[in-house]
Length: 621
Image (cartoon, rainbow, N blue to C red; front, top):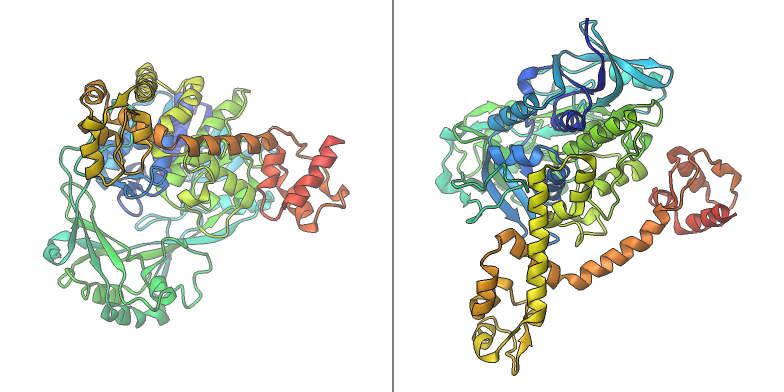
């Protein structure tokens, strides 16, 4: 009755959507199974994409042919480049999005993707042929056969929602939980755990007094996520607002602590350290008398507002009373209360770097099932799982991104080699190659990989080549041309940097931290004429490349040295217990992780440099 598929993706959140789209674009026949066709690509938490390190991930997804950047651009209501006061390694794009438009755009893109079929149902069982995936069985009793399965179950696996003393099953507000998968995987030898996350109440924006809040506008000259010409920067934007809690708000919230599922112990799972609930913030930072609250519109036309910074699972009456003591919220009307959700995850040390499970061949995990939090972290895992599922069944070499190539590589390497016992969130500080992994050069870093996979369109190839040629032309000009003291000294004086007494190369002037390429163009007419033909993107790329050349070169040298360890292959079935010189912890961790190479072994938590030296001796033998 039903056709067979190459890849079945279970779950249509951010990870599932990217997995289905990329596997189909590579040529696999894909079935996307979701419990509700109306909630494909639902933004379950805040209506925003990107942010610190997360924005870099969205750019990387786009550079590899994923859809998140395009969808984010098309549904954006505000764009901001964060951390512009810091160096370019910290610049991070972020969009505020129209929640309904985001989901609608994702569904439209999936429906327009050849080879993607849909089925509304709940997967309750994996079908196996020995220790290899053969298909899935749904709650309706339908069996679909396939060669690979990507599980992207989000918070739905045995999900439990908590509001005060109330507790009920659910994977998201108003949606049922999924049962059966965890229980089956545990019987197959998988280790499972529990995590939690939370969301704030949603408020009627008509009931708020924005005059008592600080307005937070978008960038004056907004950019966008996607490197393609399929999207354009915003022409109009909606503002967000900032307000603050107070000691009075904190006192009201404390009255509900005895009914909080977190403090009474009814929630066992660990929550995200870097996105704590408001009650957790009050408890952990008792010395602070106020916390920021970001008031974020849910879209262009809706009045619904997301209260970022007020995630909570306290009783709804306590939430409502406390909210009304926040400046601007005196008459706030609640659409629905905040809640916490507890769900199953599987420690990601049970995966290969391809995101394929070690226990079951051709079974892949992506997203919150691996212990991560955030749309962007989930989406990039879905992309990589979809790519590798397709490559595996085609008998081709897998795609494993290095830590020096992408934040995606850092994320997957951290998860697989170090594991996580709390929801994992990406930060720029997690990467040792921040200057290499900037948001502006993701297309340069990953374009060739996307091209080799067949995921880079001809128009994108042309844009990338144009960007590289433009950058190199500007760099060449800066190295060959000089500025006269008379033309450039007034600008140097204005910028409070030393004047010059003789002709000086433009390159040397631009290396000064006070001087930008735009400053030099204002002072040197010939440079202004030359650069006028290049886009803002190309000019920025050239300036960063020149200013940070020595730092970039140093990081590349370090990456090259460390990558030599990745080139030393290891037998995954090697018996580490036969090496008495290894520490007991290293023997245990290496036996469990089964690293593919020495570099991977060196990044496993608990394996120290002395252990790596011992392994090098054994490999040499």
